[in-house]
Image 1: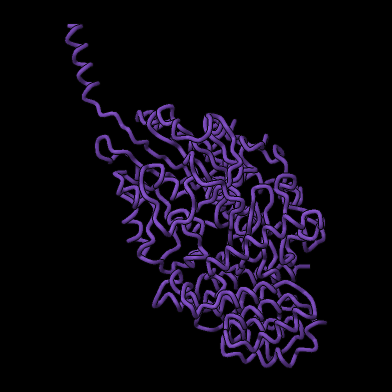
Image 2: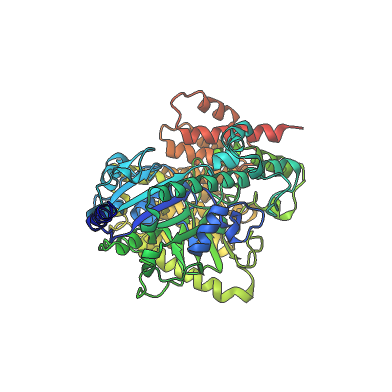
Length: 623
């Protein structure tokens, strides 16, 4: 009997197919900076599952999201093409991309992989349904590895929302308690006094109550990851699976997510290899690497690792190849409109320093974005600002920004000290400036044109292809945009003269640059500004009207601005209302905002800007 049993077991083992290709499991979490993860040095955090994965795997200290908010970030992850080439940098804009740009899992399917996504897409492109169908065998909240063919390797993504900004700040405290606090065992709950506050926040009981949400949300996320890893092990798959863990961008709190500095870009990133596939890792078990990687690299790395050919449009590198090209010296990163909050920041990092060029420096780091403004933590911050309770650093994040910043993110993790004007760092600054200039000029950044035009272009072609046309004179546009934020008599004269340029995008950037100039230097040019108010290109006229009202209290300009706010084109309306948010004197626009909010068909971004206007006016008027 024993002999028969032995023979039966032997035959069973011989008949089993040995899987020679690794499974890939991606564990993605939302809105989390490495500063709040235990294995990255935070002794207040409770993340034992992530920490164990890092201890047994490879921890990256220089991993960066290409953007600072979900949908643009995810568009780069899935396509491996930067948003400033595709036109996907504005949150939930959904403009078309060329048919040849596919989600990278499509190429894994061609290699025989079963691809599943559970479950977030949010790729920020038009025709997302067809794009998703082509990339994934299954994409739903039930998607898992179980439905693959026998012996078929899988590429599976599981996205955890427990650390999302909704939980860490934007939902009401009752919603947070329902969805986070009540799901944590008592011993896992992190108290309001059990952590250090970032120095750009006022350390008060009210702020601590809100900020504890960050630690508890990440703790719940860690617990959920543990459950998934246990499931992988229970299914007997862990020994055949390479595991990736990372966040989609920086922490979901004011001055991190949505902000073009290290706190918005840098992410935790860990890769774990089973014994069977450790030969695929260029790194030793339990090691830490400072190699620079960004989300542009993820698609090429997966395709190359699994034996495919990297498509031409993917310019990222495969960072698993032992004989790969030399590590990059710099990475280029970007952030643009988030909800109703307009902006344009382009950044460069070498891992040690982050350089950011603010092309709209008149907009503060903590700008008006409704999803942030509805949060109690932001309300506390604005209320403390109004009553003079914030120190210089805490107040500064609500002021106009310098046009360029340079932070030493090794010695200044909270990015307090701008080194851009420090002569000691001149060579660092100039090297990053040059890299940024050459990268944007080569790429012909399409997001330097107003979204008003990107929407119009998208009706007949893709922004990706439009930027490659000869009549998109990006060299000239960028030359003028590069003046933005610089203040001198010579710059003002150049910007005023450029208001007459034949290229409407050049005129637009001349007007944007003038937004940063003060009343004294603009005083001699009121005639030229008044003439530019009649510009046939609406984004120029709107911007000039904002300047004339804000600097010279022009009634004509306020009327022009109000009329544009009521425009049926929501892009123009949003530019107008967004400008109103930053005026010191807003009374002339209160009626306009009230009228807009009575429109049941008002675009959601414009509506959110109007809500921010109303709420901030209420705070201003409180005694």
